[in-house]
Amino acid sequence: MLEIIRIAVLSDNYVWLVHEPRSQETMAVDPAVAEPVLAEAEKRGWKITQIWNTHWHPDHTGGNAAIKEATGCQITGPAAEKDRIPTLDRLVKGGDTVKLGEVVAEVIDVPAHTAGHIAFYIPSEKVAFVGDTLFAMGCGRLFEGTAEQMYDNMRKLEALPDDTKIYCAHEYTQSNGEYAMVAEPDNFALKERMAEVLTLRARGEPTVPTTIKLERATNPCMRAKSAAELAERRTAKDNF
Ligand code: ZN
Ligand code: FE
Image (cartoon, rainbow, N blue to C red; front, side, top):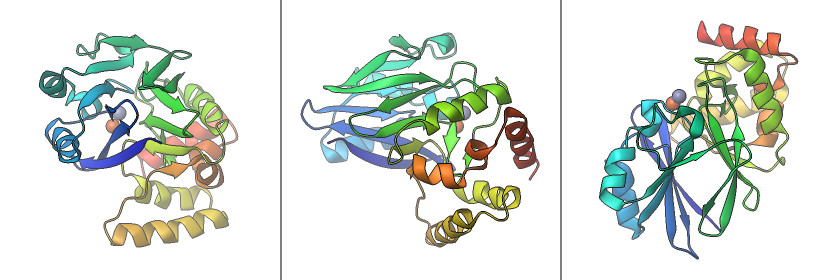
């Protein structure tokens, strides 16, 4: 029922513009910048009524103020990062729900990339907006948290249904996949996926959203058997 539009901004960010046709509400996830997001909404005749932020980093919140000024939208984000996102109107944490029209999203705490990072999961649509926590074939860097926390985050996300679509905030797939092939050289599903990814990227096409099923089969962070192994893989990727 939701219409979800990908807006590519900055060097490799994706802002997701989400329209709920019954209520005519429109929401932007992690608007790094304002102008292309406002332009896309206007082109479609949609009025942005909400912004949902997953974490405080400027490439996820940089457009908040200008979009709010232009539309009067309400901004929802992590309570634990309220001091770093002064534009927030509504503060949420794991277990809370947020609505777009009548469509309900569950907030999941996924600290590690930042200390208060959250994800939004919409069970009725089998869709999750995960910010910089889970990427195609990778996970976010551990800036404000531990490998143990990221390991727990992977358990929370892999528990979602197989066909859940995962909307992450960056096009990091090819570089993640290149490292994943080194971490798991015998993973056939990974080789197959990488071949598809290389074809898509050679044509300049996006590789996300991904799915939980695909990540379970090919993601070296999700597939790490312990927090220690995840730590080792994340560090190896940082230096890859
Ligand atoms: Zn980030
Ligand atoms: Fe980011």
